[in-house]
Length: 160
Image: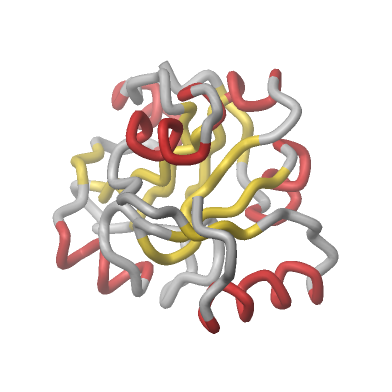
């Protein structure tokens, strides 16, 4: 991990504090485009990486954000049971249009469009802290799972 924070990362750190969250923002030396990459760069367990995955409902075109433990695969049928329609993995354009961020750096909040369906992997709740993307594949922050739920207003479910 890099020692000094860039202007962007310092701004994010200040914004987190402004909103009452005390997560630590870090900039990585190498990319964190996968959960395994992120865990290796940070020096944490892959389970502690909260992957931000964007899906799209098939009929109504609504975005769905799933924050999943780096160890888990999302059970799309499970998510469909909560949203009431089929979902597909969102493409890069839809993801950028909805969140304002590229795949691999999607933060849990601060999206261009409101996301009404936000689901948090219940396995993350077993951990003391988790790491999430902060808008870029080289910037992440740590937060408690409880703070992640508060921050996103997401629903904790078994995503598998």
